Image (tube, rainbow, N blue to C red; front, side, top):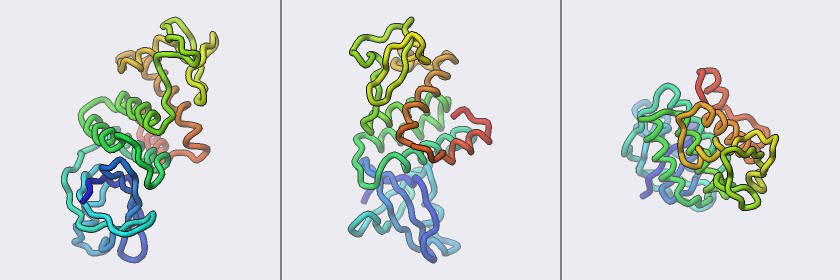
Length: 225
């Protein structure tokens, strides 16, 4: 048995769904869930996003069969927190390959859902984006530049994802805001604005040209993502 969250699902064959799952072994898996068509199917109610499930997975290869599905705990998200949840789900489907073991990812996701349900959305998203990039091997040191020199509050920097932060008098990022991000200090609007710009630039090479559907939903809803 495994604990899992549904990141995405879509209809599959006549009475089934194809679900993308995040598992408690820090991997992502594709699974076929049969018996979804019945009006009273508990599976249809269970296979929703932001619900902690217990289930078993059987079969070889890239696509498993999900069985014995039981709801353990739903996470109640609403408003901006709900759109933010869809955004992090889409990031995981786009950036984490099936079968990849990404250390600490399940705990990060679960903590993020809890934080979205109880706190301000924007700092939670920035923490998640930065932590996810680190776990995928694309993290940036917010304390030192690409030459190993400590960042200074008065310094200016540009981001080169393959190198890190490069000192540049005309760089778009102020050292003061970058150091605040490193210290998890989000009170100032300038820090939040810098963090949003920084995280978008950090994720852009990973996401490619295909736009995120959740960002469009967030924009239409007037959210902060």
